[in-house]
Image 1: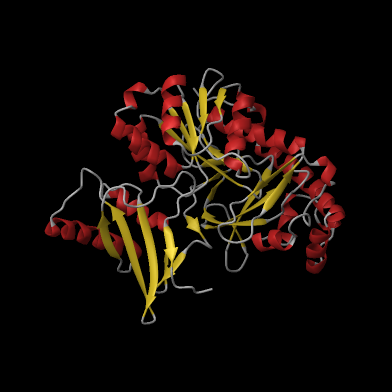
Image 2: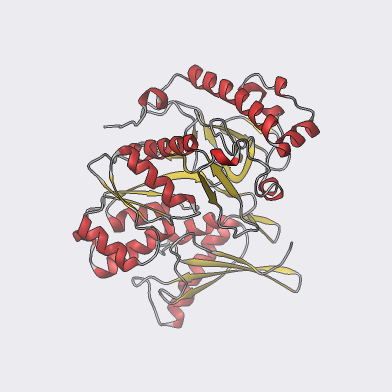
Length: 433
């Protein structure tokens, strides 16, 4: 049975959704223009005035906003409310440069919690569930986002945060956790540890809600099998409001975008041209209900496809496909576009786990792609001939998918450092920028 948190909104007619979007977009444009000098400058440079934006059909007239704009305007340049109206700050990890921070009013937090509550409810959780939140708390949005959504649903919420795996497992067993929320890489690590300790039958887990990093359907199936759960995808980014921008329903055929709060576009990442739904391109979001830190036409750098067809779950909100990679994370090796998700899919298809490391080097002016892959206990061998044969299989399968040669190195089980947050699986040694 499909469940909804706000059915009248989640299943609203498309005409009503467009009406909401148009009204909220017009108000938001006026708000940012009048309160943010940085936004005013961007709009003035593009020759756009508030009067030019009369409905969602005019969205394309607005300038794009990129992460670099958030860094240039750090810390207060894009705020659209006085500081005294804000009650919280969240931040990105800063792994690709200076941290990006976002501000929230109480109303912003209430709406964010609603978005996460929709996701938790769509995954099947109710107030009878015990929601185990293993996302990091603090500046990272994952923990507090799912935490707030779980409260709205009325579930018993365990704010375990990340790390200390032994404590995680003890609480899962003692308190009967039924819903696990964390990054997919940490879920895979937990699954691996639970299998090794023979704890699966002692746990009551039935649902997983995983996001904050790319993961493949093959990785989903591997986690589901080892934990005995149904795993759901959730999407968000700190710049907008963290997890809950989009989420999977029981059909698991794309993630429903909370379009009453966020307008999605797909663009050609090179030209900026808006592409029709169904075509692959870069995802762009506009937040139209946020008060403190609304972003208009923010380029996420995630590559995916939008689907406007009504879902059989009854929801009418547009769906986004699982991100296929990132325009800025995409590796160009020997002139070929390579996404880590492509490599991960090949490894999992061949029975390996998502414990790998991609290393790109430049030797004698030529790119070299090395992939370290952990052997699983089932695939372990200490015979050189068997290891070489297994590596050759992966080399051939990767060449078929990527179109280029990659050197594969099978390494010992658990020799690649595990992550309790976002996994670092790509090392680019070329220093190209």
